[in-house]
Length: 163
Image (tube, rainbow, N blue to C red; front, side, top):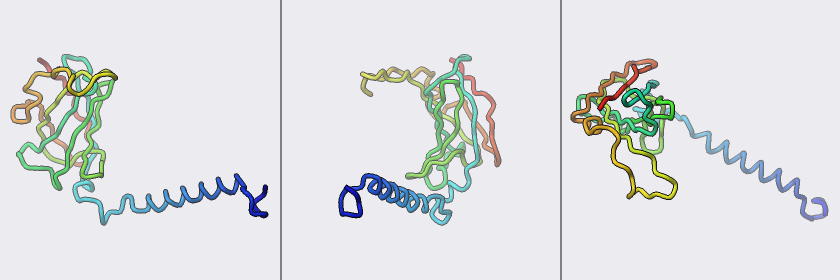
């Protein structure tokens, strides 16, 4: 059957569906990046990358959490962290509500680090392994890891943790 006679036309149906989906995408994307609604902290982020090892070996899956060294909170109560990749490298990201931006606000930070073995597919959170790092790295009050984020691009010196 053809469309002109009131029958079902598969090509026209797909074209309408595609046009509808594209229209929805354009309308949704139109609001992204609107500086009037972007939280102030997200406009101040600068790129921060680095690498992390423990005893000279990459620590994949380790989570770094950056807290202002003066004990204050990050503006707008944002959360700044990074996850170490298989090669030991990480990129800092800041999240606030549903926004996630690459980088951190310039300033001095104390870094706490947690690293556990990843769960196997059939394991639950209750079966998590113990921390693989000494406790001093996990507690921001005593962590010896401190970094300074400067305006502009930041490639941190390698962080090599020891027992």
